[in-house]
Length: 270
Length: 358
Image 1 (cartoon, rainbow over the protein chains, first blue to last red):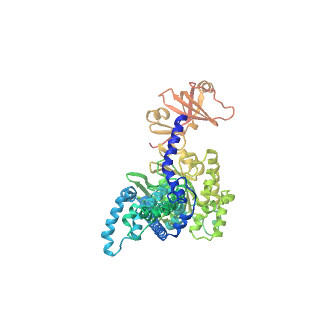
Image 2: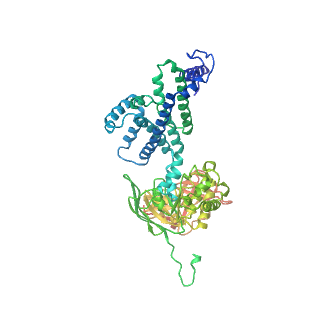
Image 3: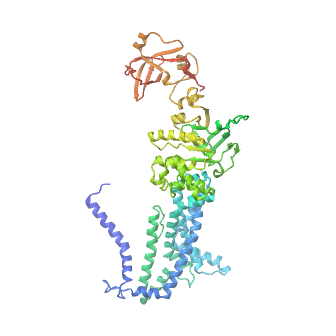
């Protein structure tokens, strides 16, 4: 496409401005986590690691981090199993309702988190309460799994479509039983898609707040919930910056790695 | 077979490697293979020849076990395998896209059949190297398929399929992706490997020249049916149907009034272009009349195409206006002093107009 110099410059500036609007505030959070001035005066009067040390010693932050890690890892693990199974079912077999299943699996990513949250909240209250299972880490994991499955499913389904069908046939043709074909041929071909899906799913779970609010019990605090609850306390502000910076880092790194692993991974809402 | 000449025993008749009985495969309302009957002898180089959509690849997939037939039976080495999955059939396939495992080295690819059969690692490696040597790739074991050229991948696929000496090797248009020169080299090499290993080869191809030059016997497929089975020369010289006559080689198919004019009989006839002699009319008249048993007609050249070793003429006949194609070999000193519109006489032995059922 031919663009005049002026148009190119204008488009470049607009692009830079757009990216700046999104990313400068994030950089600010990162910088402020080292800002020596409590009121975040700009420019910073000096840099300090104090807030990071304080955050590291804060029991609330440590508990929240641990909860978030548990929820993220568990939701990712469940999502891997269910997402892979669903992707294989839809890819390999032609059954009645196949399109519908595919649609229903992907739907949670399109639904507003608040709707999923309310729905899960009501469901847990009526279904789990009678069994004595209250809101807590378990319900958070189930909530997160609903959208983590989508990420794994999309990644694996996209990869399955790209693997030449003749590979599995060649394996069977050379005498491999179905289980051997899966282990030696299909799984290695899926490996990077699984890894990318897992990373994205974990990143999604790690910074999720809306569904979490409706599915967490009063004692279950993930990192985003902890931030939300401490926003109103001025003396916690520096620590909040540290936690926010941590969240940014733990979300950006997996997404970056995942993108490099699979060019066609489905991002969804991040 | 020479080894079988022990005194007192008669050589055993060659066993049947593949037997298809009334094999039929429907995809929805489309009948891809229609009551195929075929018997391939052990050690034979057999080809399935047909245009795309003739069902030759489906036939191959039915034999490999990737497809289940709608009806009919597949027997391999005398055993009914119709209900068996691919991994329980003593058959290996060289795929059209080679289907090499991208995450494995060349040597791991070649040793795969041994690996899934539980062969020990050192023996596996030795036999993989041996198989690579038969395709002249012994130094490429450590590479990945992505680091090989098309011709090399083709040979790796071949080595992979030969490593544990299957009873039957299926080749699905294996040379289609190669350029002409490489294809001709591989044809010779394939034939060579088939002879030295003695494994039954079943080749699927749409290239009639490939099928004719490589096969001991071939079957020509037409719309899911086997139109004719036989040795190459027989298929070429005595085509069973008009389709076979037209698909295998180039031919002049004459029917109806044209047949009556050219052969003196009704029906459909195939006259191969290389069997027709073409002579400028003035030269013919100087030489006198043709030989007995020969038929000849006059016409004018409409088109001349020089194709290296031979020249192809299109001739419009004076009587009836039919067009015939004539091939003339460009041997030394035989250049035909002819241009478009030159009046010529075409002559052929009456026997060379071969009647085909239409």
